Length: 389
Image (cartoon, rainbow, N blue to C red):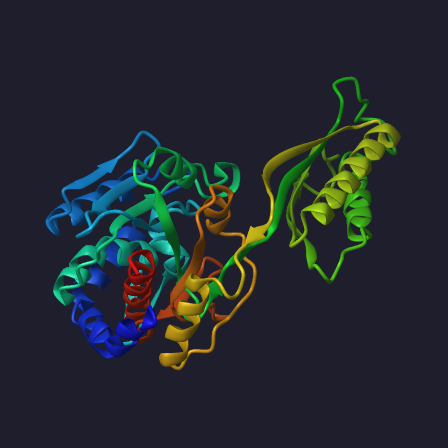
């Protein structure tokens, strides 16, 4: 019998049980979404999830010193452990902009698709499994992880993986959107900031002084001319540039933030060397203080499409009528693969950013969430069968 057979036979029951938890789940989404959770300040969300697990009878739920919240559902056999992880941190915004609107079939609010909905699903997962009377033979390790963004560099999940007392058979990283995504490869990431500032002795009052914007513009142009491979795919994203105060003042400081991505470790290192050379030349030629700060470095990696986790997830999506969206990701999967734990990323619902919404606001589907949760339970059941053939 295939590992997915039992899971596929019960998909409609899984979905109905998820929909029956509508009020509880949406309450959790709103509560979690309206809590501030900047990187390193995820404590309130962690405590909320822990308390929800305690209400569901999870005996081993705790928050560690990095604000990770971790809980264990012991399996009937317990010889293998399956991880389900969700990042908790998000960009910080003013309190008056954190409100989430709940409609009949949609949620609208800041970062509702990134990633408070998936975190609410993690908080409700023990209750959902209990209502379905799903008894896994594997231990189920649940983790809401901190410090996933920017300089956090997946520190929370790395701590969870290093501290786990149970050898992990596999892991699932949950994202709120999009339903149908199936990431089993992580791209390499080089994320950095280039700063250009005037030296202390610079005569910035002299007529014709150029400040820091022109040298940075030259850096931007040269980065844009770095050759990029299409196979394996490499990209450079120039995320933000900041500098200057007004029309008539010379900019003393300018900062460029960027991210280079590649499916090839060798090509990513080539891009890094090229950017280092550009920075060094700009420093020498401009007379300004130009520095490169590496924020994140991750090597690429992934599973084969024939791996049981991937094969089962594709079959489940097919049974749900959802064509899999397969692409490499920059999410938490990288930490699993670095630790030698096979893993995939699953999305739980569909979402979009409408043009009339503010930049941080997103709209996600409520009905599709029940399908996404059914998908999650089915994958857990299939992974449990694979771990105990």
